[in-house]
Image (tube, helix red, strand yellow):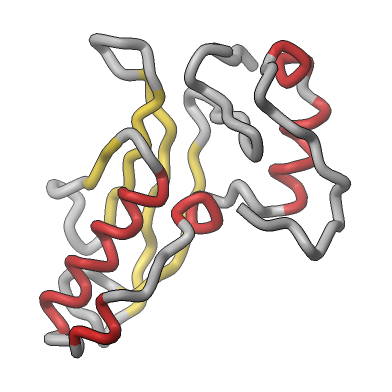
Length: 136
């Protein structure tokens, strides 16, 4: 595994270029249907910074991407709210994009912390796997 140290980490996470996960969530096309979303961490072509990309299986030609996992998943939520005509109060709910990407999964945390690259990430603060009070 190759880790680009620069912007590919923060205090809580190391972002592996090529990392991918699949999550089930309410569809952006039909909010009454659950579907799979592919979450990927890519390398930006121009600046070599992380790009967080989410692709809904119900809309494979309309991926959502951005520089922050929280922002990308918030955009997914906003799309769902629009097609479901959700009340404005529902639209204010904050989505933890890092959780939706799987970065809070104990196995992902363990693999990240066992990887040589995290030692070179000066902002990253490893946590004890199994910690229930982890807050992003």
